[in-house]
Length: 108
Image (cartoon, rainbow, N blue to C red):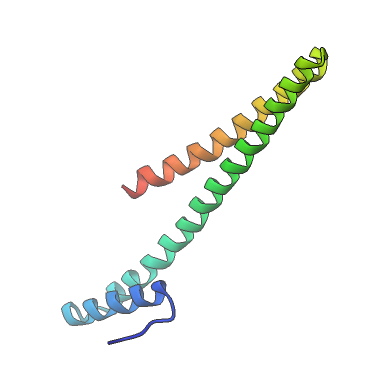
């Protein structure tokens, strides 16, 4: 039984092992080995977009709650300002979600 330091290393080793038994073309082996690295980079971007979207949703929620508080105290100007901030955060969250959707659509 082989023990690996990380999943990425295991994937590279297993793909290399499979390729060396089926082909002797070094170019193909190099291409296969680099594939998981690109996938890991894509996952990092995907994770970051999820986190950014979540952070913007949280900020939007805070701004909506502030807007409600200002409406309760009879301060519609401040409520409007908070609503505009909340809408901006919703928009930014939507952009991160769109980037993630592209990533997931391309991966299949």
